[in-house]
Length: 58
Image (cartoon, rainbow, N blue to C red; front, side, top):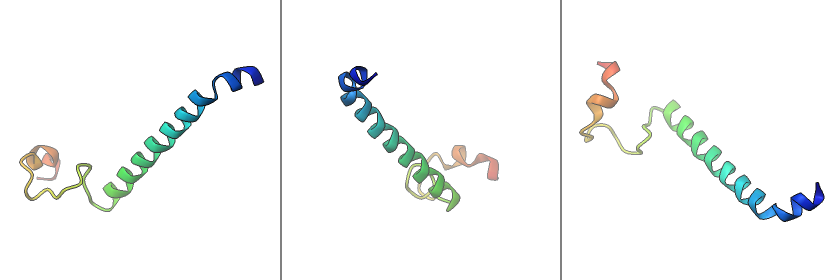
């Protein structure tokens, strides 16, 4: 088990860093959505796709 860990430590570290980054992005998107923001990061007033994105609110 220790030999396997020592052989794959770089892969394990990279996978953990990527998992933390993805979790951070998802958490930020959820918080933004709860505040009324959008996932694209800009306002909907000037967006040409706002009718498609928010068609359920009509």
